[in-house]
Length: 222
Image 1: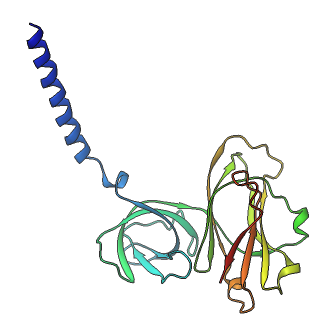
Image 2 (image 1 turned 90 degrees about the vertical axis):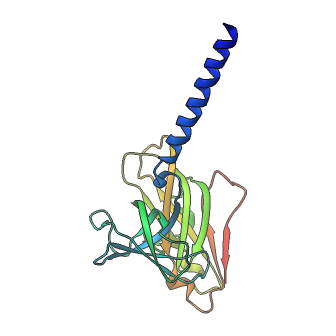
Image 3 (image 1 turned 180 degrees about the horizontal axis):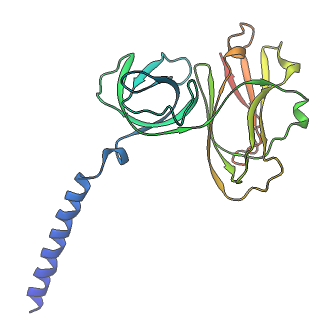
C-alpha cells in the first residue's frame, strides 16, 4: 500500500509539472519579451503611432513604427516610457514594433533659474539612473507620493551660462504637501539649447539625492 501511495504521488507530481510547462507556453509575450525605453512620440500615421528612439550619448535615431493609437493619451513630441518589442531582429533606421504599454512622463526643456540655486525648492529624491540620449537628459528616480500636482524641472544657474561648465539643478517642489510612500518617477529634459553651445564642455547636474548623499553632482561632458 505504501508503494502504491508513492507511485500515485509521483504520477501526480509529473502531471502537475506537465501542466505547468503547458501554462508557461501560453504566457503572453507582453509579460516576458519586452524592453523599456524613454522615447519621443512623433504622432500618428496611417499605420499607427510613430516613436523616435535614441540610444545613450550621441547614437543615431531609430524610428519605431507601431500599430496602436495613443493620440488620446499623449501629445506629439512628448517623451514617454514605452514597453515594447521589435517585430524582427534586423537592425535598421526604421523598425516595426509591438507596443505593450505607453505612459507619459515628466517632459520639459531646460529652464533658466529665476533665482539663486540656493533658494530653489529641492525636495529629496532617490536616484536610480541619470543618462543622456542625444539632446535629452533622462532621469529615473523615486519620489514621495502625494495626491496633488508637484513641480519638477531642470534649471540652469544663470551665473554659469557663459562658462565651459554650466551648473544645473533639479527643482523639486511638493507645493506644501506631505509625502508618503516612495514611488517610481521618470522624467526627460531637452537640454539641446545648452548642449549645442560650442563653448560648453560640461553640464554639471545637482540634485538632492538620499541614495548617494555624498555625491555632490554628476558631470556630462562632451
